[in-house]
Image 1 (cartoon, rainbow, N blue to C red):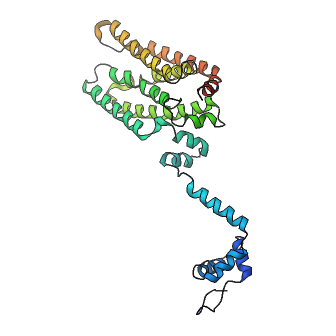
Image 2 (cartoon, rainbow, N blue to C red):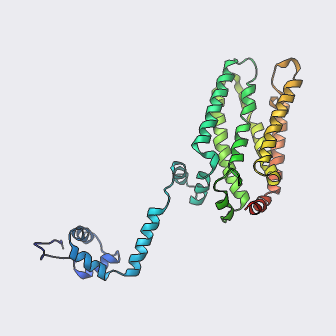
Image 3 (cartoon, rainbow, N blue to C red):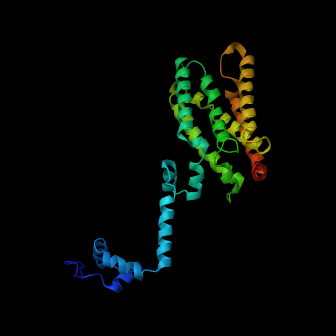
Length: 286
């Protein structure tokens, strides 16, 4: 049946169809005709309001209000959802402060400037400036992604039914992925150095793992600050004792790379042993 009005006295939607319409049981093409007719017929809209279940109607309005008020996922969260990541995990990652565009842009700018300066010295030596800076960026990113001082979502994370260590690991993997990815792209801009330009990777993992392990005892600000300061002091000492003033610094030699790998493994093991402390520190800070 096609519904319509003729001078105000023509056909209207039968009450039985209106009841089915209210229960969302009316099937096309009758549904399409009813939709079109209801937009122009005040009488049928009145009848529809009378035959509709007020409880179901109120529930429908509540669902609509909740849908309209729900925050729209941003670009990063939408991308993570498309990749199959659970919605609650995607929300945690998207809320990570160190993954914001400002931080990523600053890291990219620092790396570009460092690459430009390093490339200006030629390829006869070691890209010392780049190798010294690159391991600090992932450490800084992890430090900025967790803790009551720097994380604006920290209080919500504390009361969420998520293990503090799991939250830390989720954000650490995300920040490391972004930081190491940017470092890797910067490394590709130094092809003349060959494998020497990759000597930052193991120190970066060692610094990050050590900073995380110490975070359980010293907090998310002091721990990475001490680790970063220790790295700078190590480089200055290595430069002071370097014979002849040329050649790679000790951390970027084969022996230094082996030490960095060992430190990374030991720090990761210590981090696993201290994982329960992250829940305790979260409760005390809250």
